[in-house]
Image (cartoon, rainbow, N blue to C red; front, side, top):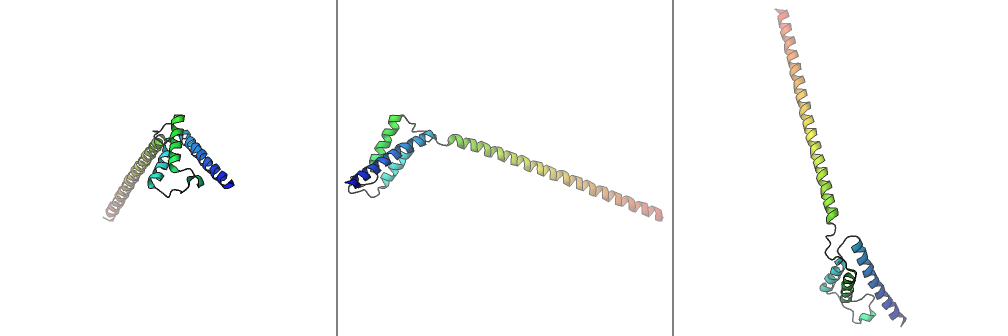
Length: 143
């Protein structure tokens, strides 16, 4: 008799957990029927069913689906929220911004390398010209 009371209490606690879970999901901007859809998936996969449901620690899956359906309907929860879309768009914008900054930095570095290469080539040309000039002067002095 005491065991039946505990089992009933456990099933009641599971119902409360479903209710609270649904409230948390909707308050977080997720679709209200997410938990319900999970229960439908579990039901469709058809795990073992208790021989005596009143001896189970959890409500039957079909009962949980019906309870979740009632919670959604009675509270007017949004079933069709595009969960995470807004946050995803923010992330996409940030990634695009970071990629743009990276590409600009790469371009600046490449331009900087080109400038250094040109300066190096100019220095080499000047050094070569100086060397040729000195050779010419030495040849003229020897004549």
